[in-house]
Length: 259
Image 1 (spheres, rainbow, N blue to C red):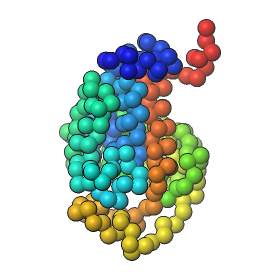
Image 2 (image 1 turned 90 degrees about the horizontal axis):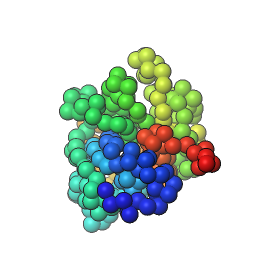
Image 3 (image 1 turned 45 degrees about the vertical axis):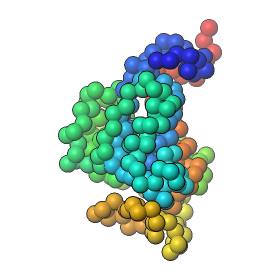
């Protein structure tokens, strides 16, 4: 690890905690509007190894919110673009790419026992439940992102246990499903903002994409594409990354005041 690169971070967290981050391996499922910023913050914080999971290619409609989306990257696999950026930030970071859509039928590819932290940033309930169930079975630390679409107020984002969530429709579904599976605790980032109604527009790139890629997942049953923006998903991602860093290091703000 180029320790000089992380001098400013070490001034905050200390040498011992920087070693914990360097020796940690984190997996991030979904590197879109939320997940790409999770990865960015983790890598810039000195995480030593990171797995990135996403089967999507970058398309034109990703440009409004996703870190890896540029006109120069349209049509490229997200995990490939992410890997290049990670190594441009920290060449020593070990990157493992998974061009995979995580669902129960692909879950056996992953050995959760090798990860120090698991981050769920995907948007399918079935996939999320599979990730959470497997992580909990191994008692692995996990944080899950609830709905970030159709929101415009990043100050309404909160970190809480799933049992203490409100307003968010996805969180409500997840609470019910986790209860059926006897999973009582799950750290999540969610919003207390009431979702706005998307304003349909035939000229919208999400509906009429000119990039040559398909913005919808084949066979998906998505009823309506959610609206999004450049500021709510990234804030959610940064909040998730902060929780991962604090949990891995066991660092708390009160530590700053210790002699």
